[in-house]
Length: 164
Image (cartoon, rainbow, N blue to C red; front, side, top):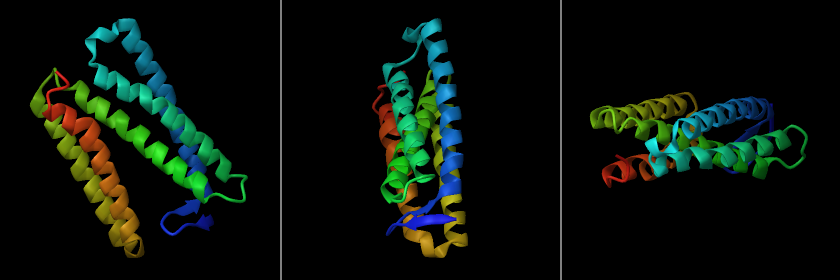
């Protein structure tokens, strides 16, 4: 049941409540991972990897807060937009960090990880477009947004040798 529609994103209160749960689970996982990293010695991990994990926490937290507002607010478009952007960036930072953690193991695996991640998100977006052709602009925006954040936080540091 949509509570509102912006020019671009459709607001769905049920989807918002699910995202609060997902963001909460991801934050719990992040706290566990960060605790293990600090316990085991953060020196084993590149600062770029740890930074992305740390930055994901406030992004996911604010996203959960924004999505909670959708359940009881009259005006929801800006809450939904804030929730989507912070959730998306937080989730992608986690994906980037996981990919970059594989660099010491094997660079081929790292490149394969990012290739597979992008290819699967492209397939996901294409299926979304096939089933919802009237939402093509939104789905393409979301895919290219994903691609930019993965490129900036995952592929670029990899290609520049910032992670070893």
